Structures are given as C-alpha cells and as structure tokens.
Amino acid sequence: MLFSPSEAPELSARHHAYSRKQKSLGLLCTNFLNLYSRGATQVIGLDEAASKLGVERRRIYDIVNVLESVGVLARKAKNQYTWKGFDAIPKALRDLKEEGLRENPSNFDNKNNNSVKDNEDNDEDDSDCNPNTGSQNDTSIPNGILKSTTSRFERRKEKSLGLLTQNFVKLFLCANVDVISLDDAAKLLLGDAQSSSVMRTKVRRLYDIANVLSSMELIEKTHTADTRKPAFRWLGLKGKSDQSMGVLPLHESRKRAFGTDVTNICFKRNKIESLVDEGKCQNPKENQIKADQLSTSVGTSNSDPGTYQFGPFAPKVYGFEEKVSQTPDLESLASTYRPEYHNQALRELFVHYMEAWKSWYSEVTEKKPIQIS
DNA sequence: TCGTCCCGCCACCCT
DNA sequence: AGGGTGGCGGGACGA
Image 1 (spheres, rainbow, N blue to C red):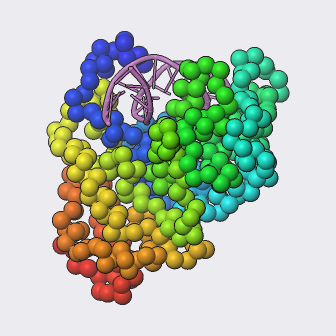
Image 2 (tube, rainbow, N blue to C red):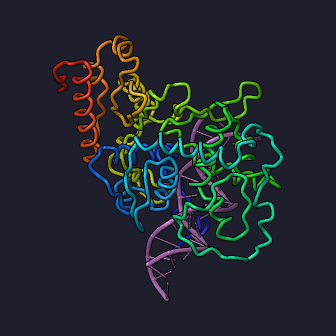
Image 3 (tube, rainbow, N blue to C red):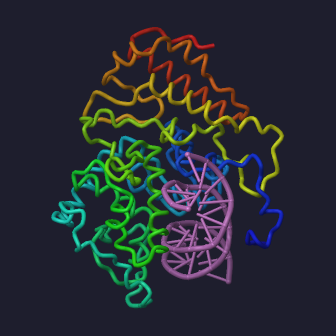
C-alpha cells in the first residue's frame, strides 16, 4: 500500500536522527564502489546491491547508469551488471571524446552556440510517431548532445541519466574547459529551458550526475571565479598526465562526510524508528577528518600513464616520496584514526582495506608489512 | 532564502 | 500481464 507523505501522518514526522548527508547519492556511490572494487565480484545484482547498501533499488539505478556511462560497469542482463573496474574509465573517456568530437566538432568550441537547442522544447506535442522498440542497451542511438530525434523512445533516452552523464563528460573532454557553470552545463546538456520549473528539473539531474562523478573524483563542485555561481571542475585525466586520476571512493567530495555505515538503513527518512545504537551513524565531521587524512596519506595515482589505478588503496608512485615524507607516522595515523564500526559488514570492509593498505604500503616501500593492531 | 538533492510515484518498455 | 527500468518533480534539508 502506498502513501503520499500527506496521507501517512506517521511518515511525515521527522526522524530526529535523520541526516540527508547520510543518504546522499555520492555517499551511496562511494559505498557501492567500495563494495565492488574489491575485485571478487564480477557480476553485480541490483537487488543484491540494494540490499547490501540498504537502499531502494531505485537508487541503485541512478548509480549504475552513471557508472556505466564512464565504463565502470556494463549491463549484462536484466538486473545484472558486470564490474569492469576503474581501469576501464580511461578508455571510456577516450571513446567519449572521440565520439563527441566526431559528432559535433564545432559546437564544443563555443559554449553559447545557439545551435545547441533543446530537443524537448517541443516535447509536449506528444507525437507518437515511430515508437522505438529497440533494446535499452542500444548504444547505436546517437549520443549527441545536439542530435535531434523525434520518437518518444529516443526523447526518453535522450534525457536518460546515462546519456546525460556521457554528454556532461564530453563537455569537458571536447571543449577544453576546466570549469563550467551549473547554468551553462544545464543549458548545453539539456537545452535552454522555457520555464524556471523545467530548468529546475534539469538541474536536479545534473546534481545527481555530479554527485556520482564527484565521488569518483572525476569532477568536483566549485564556483565560477567571477560570479561565484555553482560550477563543476573537471579533475579526471586533465593536467595530470593520466597518472593521478586515481579515485578514492573512500572519501567523498569535500562537502560530504565519509560514510560511517556501508548501509544507509539507519537513516531511512520518516520510516524507520530510531535504532538501538544511534551513535553508529553519527559524527560525520569527525569521520570526514579521518577520511581526508587517510586519503592524503594514501595517495591516488599511478606512474604508468597507460594504466590507472582506482579504489581506496590504489598504488601511487607519482609524488609518492613527497607524500610519504609529509606523512608523519602512518602507523600511528592508522591506529589513531581507525574507525570503530558497529556494523559487521563494514568492519569486514575496513579490515579488507587495512590489509590492502598494508600490502600496498609494504610493496611500494619495500618494507615489511606494517603491524597495525 | 535558496541551493541542493532525497525520495518515490508512475509511465514506459521488455519479457 | 507483470515486472524491471528510470524520468520526473515535490518538497525536505542545510548553509
């Protein structure tokens, strides 16, 4: 039985411990990547992922659509995705760039090009011509930002989160810009909105995409220098000689707090009573510090321009010496900032990270593994 | 106040 | 017909 919030009084009462930060798409993506970047799982079931992460299936769709767009995942079958890993991102980005340049080489030179028109300006005509019955995986459908299509299916696909993600990435890859304002991105990707409400909806999708890409550190949210308007900065490969494109899913965009629980169950808005141990999901600031420090000391890149290492403990040779020398005492840091998880799954996850970290550290420093009690 | 974005309804599409 | 998928926008949260 379904209730609208207004119809379900028991649902409208704010759960006093609820924090939307704990439920953010970026954090969820971080947890998702942490869960599956361990290498053991090749096939990811959506139900399983939703269950493990303690979220609704719908949220998993948001994430996998974006991740699929940058090559991390590939759809295998209904309800199933194949984990391609972070190594697949560079190739996906190259393909996107080639595709973008091939499709509209000139339009990327001018962000305000008027030829960038909104295909949905005439959306309401509800024309029913040529219903497309092709597969949802039909990648042959042009991804062009500027392509004009008419069928209902194509217009639907045109607005899909996955395609929007690809086009968003193309903006950076093909237009040689580091920072693009939220407004410009929305207009370029989705066309000039006819009304503020339409634009608002469009911007929401950009936030969704940006949160996932931010959690992979492909982009970061920032502001334009002049107007201080919200903007996105491309971090990906650019200016890093491909080497520091590593991602630390362990920590999120600076704004977000490090997830304290691999699941988000305890903060289910409106619907879940206060759990026995509320403390286990609290104190995000403290955890933010921990995660930042951890990530700073771990580093994120790889010296081999041809390969990319992602994930929380990706080997980083680039600038490694400096990093190590700047890090006073990794052993004490690790012990000092060792999170105390109450969640068994998260505890195991953390143990895994510690093992990976010890292994990596000993490898790159040619030391014996660190003894972390 | 306004930027941000969670949440879930429900239309669409596939099997 | 039923279930999977995901567009969409209301409205809550946080700065």
